[in-house]
Length: 97
Image (cartoon, rainbow, N blue to C red):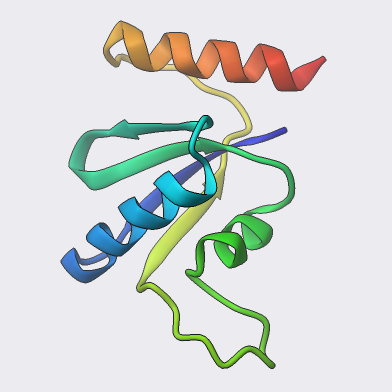
């Protein structure tokens, strides 16, 4: 189960994304700085985008929640608060084996 970074690109998307993340990933999300999110979920970046309502299949009539980038994490390194690294490590280990 991969980890994804969600980057809303405007204020309208920020609030809608928060509600969608809490609904779709209730036990697999971590808020990070600037209204961005980490989520752990099955599928591709495109699947996560559709699940959250960022994008929909072409035949779907539902509106999107806004402009959000969905990036799959391939590796990680850097400086962040310990709780973020603990979450990433736990999800990474749980899904890599």
